[in-house]
Length: 304
Image (cartoon, rainbow, N blue to C red; front, side, top):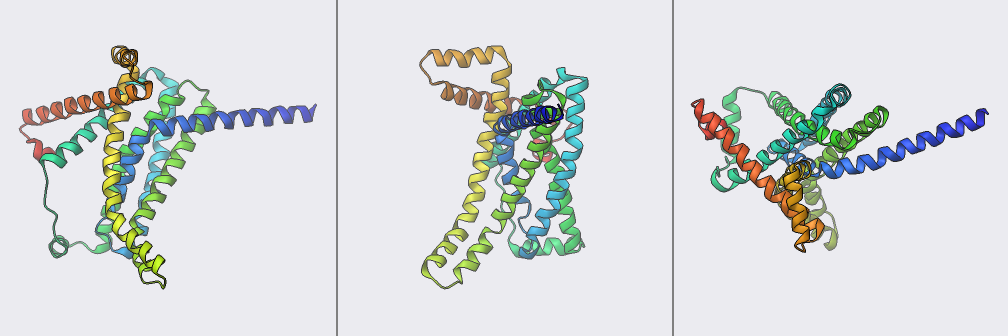
């Protein structure tokens, strides 16, 4: 009898873990846009940091991100338990914010180009601030952790929508796993990216033509990888944010189905509809924010 009970328990645990695995994969797909943007943004956060301090800064932000998740996961579970009707509206708010961020990035890139300070000018600015390098480092970490809190909230809300209908235990494990995995993946990749050029320089000094060539390739690819991550992250934000509206508003969902009826493949109809809706939502939200700032007497540029 005890053996049968143990086998039943093990079977239940295996089923639970299988459910968690499936739901985690689904949540990861749902949050792809935020993860891509989070990765690019956090890799940029260590720009200007002394090479020997890059990994300590990434470690500091990683620890702060874990604290953010420890706050956000219980809060999300509480909402799904007490007021589950808020899950979809919160998801749509998160989607609108994603679209807004994506459109703001596009507008900034196209119309608000700012010249970068040269190293000497940056050094003069640091000296003028009167802050020590360690104080500036802590300030940079605090800023990155605040940014991570916003992006982590988006990831948790989007993940919650995937697991909202599941039992509490499954919901808890799935959200905890996705939060931990996403944090490890993002900051592991950030650490790899920010040290890529250093590894390349080290390889360039090693003996062997092939090793040196690979080293020079890494040094050359590092800045391009950052730019590519930024572009992919922005597009993914429109796709994920727009997809939330397409799949939760009947009129938009029917439009996507109509596209399929015109002979457009299902996956392509989904991508096109999500991208177009994402851009439109982003433009509307950015326009509303700028109008609100004008009413308050604050220019869009100043608000940005």
